[in-house]
Length: 129
Image (cartoon, rainbow, N blue to C red):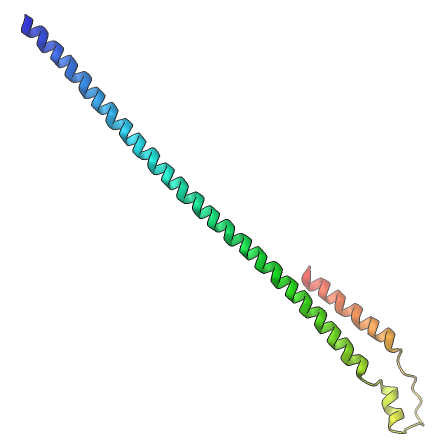
């Protein structure tokens, strides 16, 4: 009887020990999975930070290119305006060649320059928008 009682007690303790071992294994696996999930999360956060940095860099480059293009178009407008202003009008060319029989009043240079500037500025606004 005494041995049967000890045997039952031993079996009960063995089952409890086995159950505790299974529980410990599950806890260890859960901790390992948690650690792995934490590592995966950290990697994803690093990737997101890297992509945010690339996005900011791309935005900066886009804005710089936009500024350069605007400056380029403004310079082109100024250069073309200066070239047009330096060219003689048709009436001036005829007078220089002493063909005074044809009378042509010179174009109002300021008005034509304003028209050219307005047209180019409208084109620039359309290309930037």
